[in-house]
Length: 114
Image 1 (cartoon, rainbow, N blue to C red):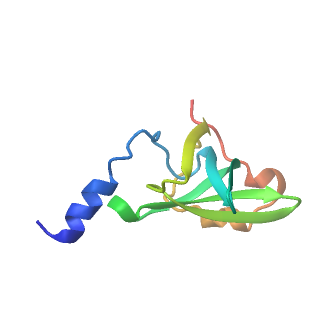
Image 2 (image 1 turned 180 degrees about the vertical axis):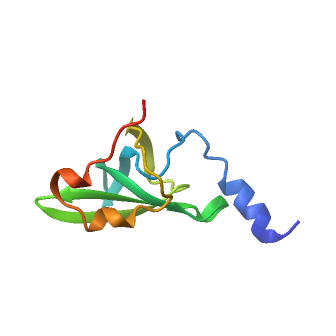
Image 3 (image 1 turned 45 degrees about the horizontal axis):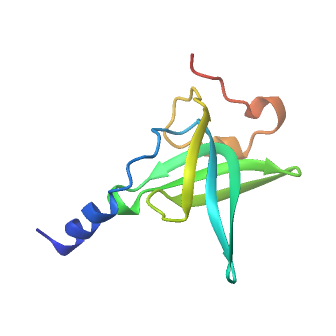
């Protein structure tokens, strides 16, 4: 067994995360460490892509903050992620919804799966 495969299997032990995909609205609670203090902050937005596999899997979340689009990339197996909540499942036809960056207002809404 390769060393890289062995390390990726050890890192994939974090499997208590919910299943989600592009178009879903998530709230990610992650730890912020400032000096010797630690606090939990949340980031709520739409998943625009998931990429990678195994230990290197990441996902990108986009939200609008004060009229400005903010995107953040999270490693899926990061120890700093406290929990992930799926707020709603979105109905999209693409795996990567970068077209959302150009849309504003009502046109940027995503239909919900029922």
